[in-house]
Image (cartoon, rainbow over all chains, first blue to last red; front, side, top):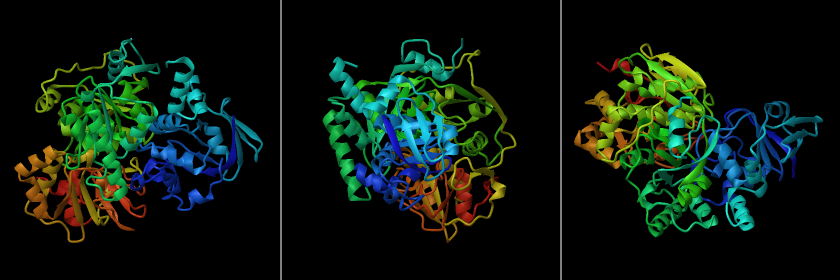
Length: 168
Length: 418
């Protein structure tokens, strides 16, 4: 499966309070959360995004709180995947669990500029910069985590497995 | 091959000898959610087809992030939590009980050698009691509620050897801020921190909670200490349960060993807007502040309130400062009343709010205005953390916060401590 969109560029240590401030945890509605995504960094962010766009950031993306609202807001606003040098641990796990594709690649994170068109092959973990005509490789993830992403999150992954095999 | 503390706890909970980088499914001893994260977990629980929680005695929800509710949306989420816990028959700590990371240790259900997951990033706090406790998201929480198990990657460990004696006026908070500044906000990502050495042994359990609480601010999955007599004495107030401590083997393998001498440490400050933006207090002395916050899961414990009260006794805070105090639990609140601490703080000008997380996490109880500076005993100073992205947050020890409230600017507590 390929993801395709334009890049939005961010720096290091993008924390969960910037992704979705705690004052908006008064709802579990993904659409409402999406409307405040990255608001404290760019109040107009949610309006600028076209479906499929890609976030590209430096190291330690998603540091801070355990709030799953953060990857949910990013996914719901229309971002197809996040590419970063590294991710904070809880965000990393949450992103897989809710089905937001994420890729670790220092090369891609450094080389991609804002506005570059990017195509990502989820299965191969291959990131293609169409604008610059370059290809980067993301860090491999274990096969079962790949399957969680392909299924669209842990809940779908578990229920598909249960349907298919009758157990986990 | 010897094992670290976390390797031992993950071995005892997965029924096999494990080492760093293996992936295991482990049994959990306790599962906790708070009002920011539990509502999504309830939805995931239902989507997964969950019927009952795995063990009613090993599960709790806590309403602390917005307690009491400041707005209708939150009221609805609180109601959902009340109905869910009632129908599944497990414990819920409602408003006024306190902050989850104080309540779970006070419950007596977690201790040396325990494995705990909580849907809050500061769940690593119980590492001070020699428990491997770590933060997860709502979907993992739901899986834990249903099955009592979760998969983990066994982390590598960084050992912090802390030698020497902390000078007067310098506390566990200054020490952990210093370590975070040194290793940086992602210096321990995916790893476990082990704190050891004479400076750790000398700390009270309250001070140890402060150190373990902030392990996440260096990216760590856990911040563990060995259990000693102080640990068991602290626990004896809350339980007579017998725990099995986990200690590191002499030949345990570490990713890094970092040695520090704490005897020359100054009070430390984390400047806006990053927790690893740490400097000695001398660099920022005199910075005007409009709000001071004493509380949170990092520094809202009895020892913290006592230190502030000793410094403020018979004095009056600066006219331009709002001083907000939130004891970390009802038990601490009552202890502080019995000791006269609350009276001292209120007479000095403090506004005491319901035990909870509000001021730290920006949901209510003290949102700063544009351009204001806050000095706080909390663990995060991210932009917008306290509810306003145009305010600046400085993190410090309770003594530094009290001294700064007194002068209306960042002040050195050593000037006030005899």
